[in-house]
Image 1 (cartoon, one colour):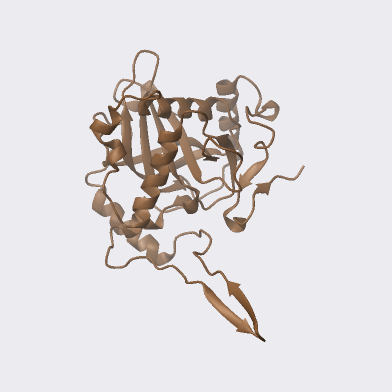
Image 2 (cartoon, one colour):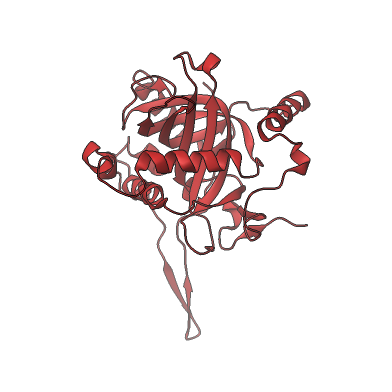
Length: 294
């Protein structure tokens, strides 16, 4: 598999395979000129596409784990297992169920595989959750996660913090005992609700066939009329092709979206609050929210 134009790339998740070479962060520098002190914040650089050296590392890691990685629709997946995916997905940024933040901090990809393609006798949904710290492309928001979704938001933040420290352990929140604790909104219900909302009620602005590697967080069984859902955290997500979408491909995507939402894409109105409808997360200008021009 070739590495193409990437949408998401988690350097900490890659560097965990090379613990002897921890990633470095640039320091904050104080500069004094003519008795006036200027503090220059040289924090982590804005997300960028993988370098040639990082691609070589990624190739090594892929060869290392591809012997044990499964397709995301494989039966019996458990937390901590690596999966490979290659399917049409939509994506967008989001944020905690609070007031409107300056920047979204969660990124979600979502896609579905029908019965005739899953090879396991039933449809399978896939939702990838990660941090916008690793987002490489300007991306529209899908709004807040919604009421009662604290468990999912806190899980995404916890996994990102563990990755930053090079800790590859499965979060305790995913242990059987923790998942079985009584609560108003069970983890599997939260994940299913979030997937359904972003898949059916927000603007399908970003959608393409993508592929990559991810580690399973939760395998939620399906039931009559409800697909099985795989929740996972990606290492990288890239476009499946190096070429730009051909007009025939765009036409097919448009046809599929029209069938899904029951109306032409140009008449689509996202089910989002007015303040969210034109917000973007732009990795090249992360100091402030980005809005589309009229």
